[in-house]
Length: 497
Image (cartoon, rainbow, N blue to C red; front, side):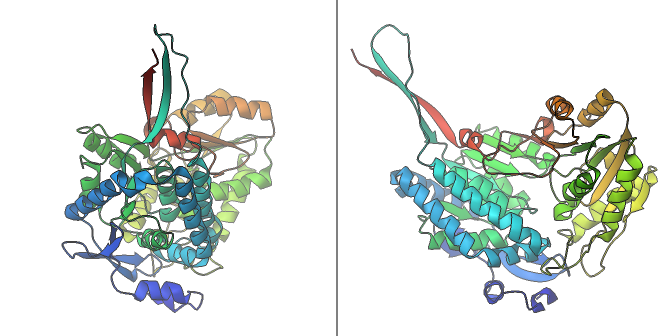
């Protein structure tokens, strides 16, 4: 067991959860071992030591979970009123809030991210998402239609659940992104098979326990931790899964689209990004420096919308860059569970080596190192906050690194920076920093991105849609736009003659 658990801040509830035998799959309202009885180990990224043992779901387990979801969909869940669905979601949100400290610690231990982030961002936003969509359960209305077909008809529409939803969640925000998928799916009357990442399955498992406590009927949510090549592939290819909602890499997104083709599954994908952050000469420099820190070093840079391409106008280039470098060098790295930690380790050794490989490649291509560019603490998977002066044609300025690596690029001309910002296969998010509101709005309208922040970064709310242009995804999560992806519209005609 990892030495991190010796930290006195770790609660007794977290210790008990981690020490209580291998974590089981949640299928049909029961906690069961995988049929193969295979297990895997989830590792503490701060030390590389074992954190917990988890049963590994494979195709047979996914089959059982899908059948349990189908049974619940066609049985008790279909007879529960919208108001009752809302009550159950609200009860679940209350339980998450009640256990917020425990969930924050568990998320920090499993992902490596700072406790200050999980307690102020991940868990509160999870609560907010369940409450927001609880409110939608009673508001999924159709409409009457003024048809002109000869005769006398009552024509109207209904919104009905899509069916069994396969939800695949990444390792960077395991609990919060699970709520992005579960909350709207359940509010609309669907049932769900949730596959958390094998790297960070623990809060999903604890969430299943809270769902039992909330009296959500058996089979409505099933949780099958496992690997993408086995459990994930079985879920995306299953003919009785009606929809897949996935957050992860663009490469895996392509595989999911192919796998869904045979049965024409509905698919929502939130994929990669290489987001531009553009700073104009009239921007508030102090606010910009803080915003840049948030855009690239929050969550160790393991964020799909990270502002990893920083475009600085030449008039303020040196001043802003100096402030960014100074702040990057001052970031305190350490074990995520320590309240003094500002940046934790990356999620795994493999991912750490991938990020370090990108940095080395950038240096070989001529990038100038201004901060970091090396491992941090040696005990775990730490990479120091890295700032590189780069060019647009360099790999570090083109490909998603998914780590604390910032490529800084100068510009002078407005139209040129817009062109360069859009010269990417991605289109998830972008940032603009300027006191000139007219100019900021014009630039926002010109950028090919699903979300554009002006004088801020990484601003999220359950009411605001989230998703990308181009190869950053298909569809939207959050807000009422998410409901469109979890319902089917049925048109009904009644002949009144």
